[in-house]
Amino acid sequence: MDTIYSAFSQERLLILCANIVLVTTFVFTQNSCVLADNIRIVNGIVSPPLVNSLQIERSLTKIESDEKSEAEFNSYISRKYANCQISTVTKGVKHIRLVRYYQGRPVRLNVIEADMNVNPKIKIEPVLASTTLSHKASITAMAKRTNSIVAVNGAFFLPQTGCPLGTMMVDKKLYTGPVFNRVAMGFFDDGFKMDRVKLNASLKCGWNSIKIDNINQPRMSVGFTLCYTPDWGQMSPSTPKNGLQVVVSDGKIISKGTQRCPIPLNGYVLVGPATNLSSLKINDRVSLDVKTLPEWENVNHIISGGPYLVKDGQVYVDIQDQKLLAIGGRNPRTAIGYTKDNRFIIITADGREGSSIGMTLKELAYYMQKLGCVNAMNLDGGGSTVMYVNGYIANKPPVKGGIALSNALTISVQQ
Image (cartoon, rainbow, N blue to C red; front, side, top):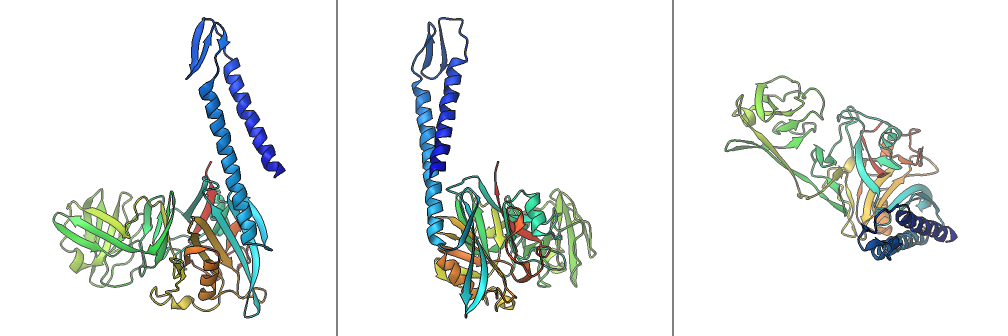
């Protein structure tokens, strides 16, 4: 508490000194001049700086309010995680270590709780391992590249290539579409939303419209028409049986064929059944219309996961509906969620060792609910589970330092 008031006093002194300097450092050669609103000098006498005083009081009030908000957050975390090891990552972000017991055996947990009302400079976003999708990197490399103070493994991905499996949007740019309409979290300026996400995309050519089933994802049906952008890589994937590839550059079809082809930097390649694409002709003008359902307006980022853990405040583990039966059982886990007052929560659970046996999805769901999450979802786990905090790996992943990953979810502080 002494530290808080000391910092407050120092800032008050700095503001007052700055305003004194503002008034006293002018040299006047005329009888009258105006420095600012309601600050007038007549015959060398400074009239009372009423507006400036008001600005000072407002600044001091804001400082007091910010300090009160931070103190309340600190107190809230201390009560919520009593008898746990708590450390401050930065203003408004806490790292909590604890051990819980399931069936009499330990599970080592790391929790991050962040409040952007306490620190509006906090930025939470997914990041990719590289500039194209088919790459992998360590969590430490991704965190350092983005100056992140916290990072955890993110969406599921293809181990062979690193391509994320599911919806991925970064800075309003959609990199990949959904897989099995799995649950995803949207990040907005004023909070978060969570829902199962579908793709609503089509190619317009004159009066014709062709459904686009996915973007930058592996083929899951021979009947799908897929779109591949330069984010996928330099070349399109193989053509399905009885399929066709259509190359679009600057909104115009420039070629058609049955073989893999270069993806234009200013365009994309459509790959699908010839029955869907054969009506398109070279030199046709086309446009690609891409939306998600729900159509989240003003969403900045989206990251996919699955299954749900908590939905509208209730435990809800829809592992079968999201075709994720393979990730059941007791394993290392990573999950994210948010509370009714928009506090953001990340949790990792270590597993596959005697000192930490991992969690089932139901156990994880009940714990996220216990932490106050109104919505929460599972992220990639198992060997991928890894948490980075302020320059070091905070948990104990199965592989020291964590395996190479396709993407991560990060917290940084904007300058």
